[in-house]
Image (cartoon, rainbow, N blue to C red; front, side, top):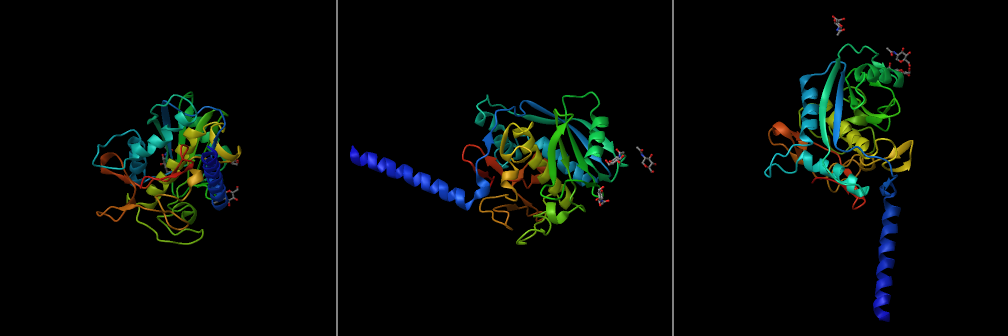
Length: 302
Ligand SMILES: *[C@@H]1O[C@H](CO)[C@@H](O)[C@H](O)[C@H]1NC(C)=O
Ligand SMILES: *[C@@H]1O[C@H](CO)[C@@H](O)[C@H](O)[C@H]1NC(C)=O
Ligand SMILES: *[C@@H]1O[C@H](CO)[C@@H](O)[C@H](O)[C@H]1NC(C)=O
């Protein structure tokens, strides 16, 4: 009896020790905690705003990514985007709520090819674009994609897209376009990075750096938006400047990632594109890691 107690406490001592060692080595991996507020569930209806002039390649890649979130392409195309999305859906259970699928679709599209507000968007400009696009549709999530020649104030530094609230209650996303705006900040691994070790730059799976960098940026903000839509969901740190489900795992795309190295990926033999998921229409995407609330670590597809 005494000896089993002894082993037992030795065992828990070792667990505590290894937990604290992990925490010491990986300070950014302190767990995200749930703050009790709502997550997005059920239907997430996007209002897509194309702000400025976009080529077909960029629009098609982003549209196909959205369609892929709830698409099951069968067993021979693994892993799939919908499997990546399952991780986001699992946050409902992690919050102690009933789980369920989250259906994302585009319900409205607005085109502002002439950049009616400005080519250097302030927060005020973004609000007025949202106001015009949203009208009376309170049940949509406006997502502004900016064209290559549009600068968005607040993006580039630290983040390449962001989610917020319009009118204090309607979740929104703004996505920068790193094809020419700050590629060194926002287009890695498809462009040389301005941070730390260069590592290798990789071919984008769609063939267009801006398209795939925007997919990564939008995918990250979508994860953060669904899991922390009102700043009362899952995050770590300060409410005003939170580390969220995707931003906790920034610059990680596959297992074994470290600074300057994406981690394990696949290469498309047809065009050399680096990818880790399959989606609709035979498309391939490189999607970022997501914080796994069950294991408290960054989760990747490969
Ligand atoms: C955009 O600008 C062009 C050239 O100035 C003009 O011909 C066109 O009508 C404008 N489009 C819209 C929707 O305002
Ligand atoms: C864009 O924002 C600037 C600064 O807030 C403001 O002066 C300008 O009027 C805005 N333009 C439009 C069209 O909203
Ligand atoms: C955009 O506006 C900000 C502040 O109004 C200014 O500091 C910045 O230089 C402008 N950027 C461009 C590309 O015009």
